[in-house]
Image 1 (cartoon, helix red, strand yellow):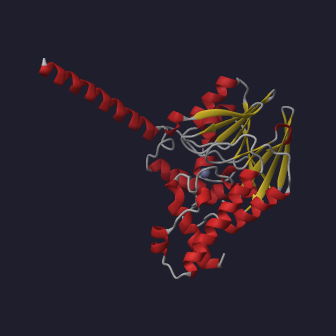
Image 2: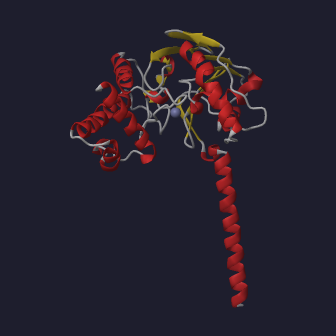
Image 3: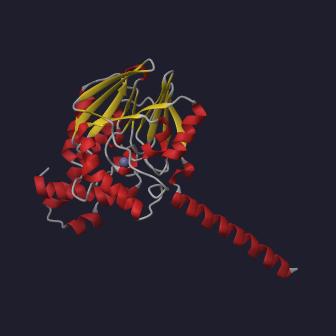
Length: 316
Ligand SMILES: [Zn+2]
């Protein structure tokens, strides 16, 4: 009886272990396993968690998608299909980073018009395509799917572009060099929402936007862009972040929080630099200000390094 029990518990343990290993490998292959859909405003849906955020807007004339990641755009596409059978007519990306601009391949049957600022078209040829092929060769999840390829933008614009589609107005704006050199926001006045890409991160430290090992996010640029967005005083109920949970109805406070984050964090690092601390000491001793202390710590070292390097290089 004792042996039977021992065998039984061993069996249970084995099953649990197998389930765990299987779940682990599924997670490794498909970070989309826990993807969640949130309706941010009427017909405006956010796909969030398990990676960067993507948004889709359903209209009577089809669907518009903002941001896509090849690692989870198949799950996002399935979610779109559960809401509507309308074709994906337009695709935008907030900036040329793998987690925001690679998922178009999953929408290829719909052949969407892919619109970005012209800088992103340039980035496609300078860094994105190379990075995509490298990740594919490494067998990275999503990138190594048979036949996968990087979809190239089909329309580039310089400063701003207004799209009238399905009874809605979409105001796209090239915001300049902040998180990347080609950051774009998209505003829908009728829905009171603005899609921010990685100019806005809720409850998480921002990424450093490493592109081609050379280009990084510009802290000062991000502060200036966020200030300009605040000064526009648009009727936005919800600014939708590129990472982290959406705060529906919180309005411009999210944007000023993000601006304050960059200002206050940079000040903290600057004080340590002025006190003669080395990078190693800063990394070890840095304490996140109380206001941001509950942010997930994962991306903290990289953004600290960015603050440090740009302070050393530029003095700001
Ligand atoms: Zn991102």
